[in-house]
Length: 267
Length: 311
Image (cartoon, rainbow over all chains, first blue to last red):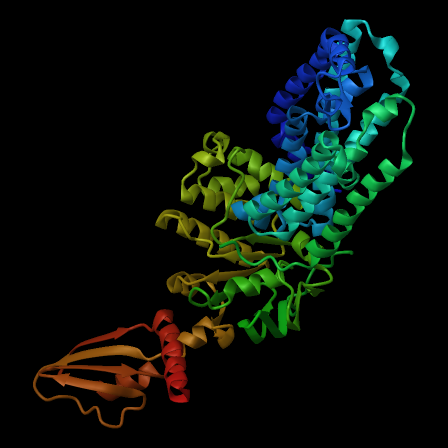
């Protein structure tokens, strides 16, 4: 890993990161507030049968329990947008964006191997994603403390939730970086990575809303990010294993392809 | 890998049958050449001739289809990182990080080079990049200022070999001369420079040897002086009264006589020609020095003619 490149990559993202961290903490704090204010009303509504229970779930989350509410907060499109800025946006730009801009030429004229470049960018992406995950979880913990519902959580399991989230977004970041090293232009890398993210999200939401196709959730990486299960002591090692495989495959692909690619002159 | 300094007799760049194909397109074909330590080597060719492909292959951006190449005695495929540590590279039409100031860009690229920046201050001074200019963001720079940053970042660590792709592009004439002076000083220090250009006058001004490439093929490789000596010079003379006897003067051709004037081309020894035409009737004599441009065009004209014949 190249420390100078790593630090510069973080430096380039610092303003964007600061904004996203503030927004993530705010969003995280809001979830326990919503839970405390509306959980009983939702439970009554669900028990009355007037409203299908499935429609009160969102992915693997719900507002019936605090762990479910926290899951909902982390799988909500807003949270996905916050983390996605770095897991997708930054990773896709990391190589293809620099190549399109012509700056990759200058960077790779320095004594940095392509493998080192990839590993450094991957480490920077993991750091950025990790910071946003910490902000989301930190915001949730602050909200939980303010609402006085800490007794409904096993705080000792939060690091496992963080790891689970980091692995989910690490998988998308690894895919984004693999796409980034494969294309000379930013747009196809972004399109491919967004398609991968949206298909995964669609499968998860579809299965949670329509029980007949609940099987589709198994094929979504989002389904294997389940803070609700972890926080209720039902951690499934298979979730971590599947996410690990989803990280390893694009990383191995990128480490194989990138050093062997021809980088012709930018047009 | 431990870096070892090159001896002056060694080739800093050596290619042997270097070939690069993009699919069916032959970008470089069987290119064999060497660049000696301590020389400024011009690599000439029109757009699309294969100059950038050659440079990118030397720096490990592209992988050769066939053949081999070494830079500073190191293999371009296996030792690419070490090659880039010991060289400086200016890409053609360089792109820089717009959000950085000029000073930060040089600092950042210098740090990545990890070889110090012994020449940064001197180069900034010679290329008139003052501290106040360097404090400005790169995005506010003109094309010429960006090019100067490109030149400085390529040379700031005083590399054994600099590979410069169209280095004077965008520089005003004053800065071009400042750049040529830097090149001369680098040569005097024993540094080697591989210099790609299609500006023939600057290659003629700066380079010791020149390779001419076209459609990926090496057309010529020789000393600039030798190349120029072989070119035909333009001669024009004027006389009073009786015309001098021009028959049988070695090297004189394309003779055009109009009244009291004669125009011709001369190849070879000038002193023999001057002796032959010496006469009291001679009023004026002009001999235009051969230009590299003509040598260049002659090579290409010859090649085009042979291609037409083949066709």
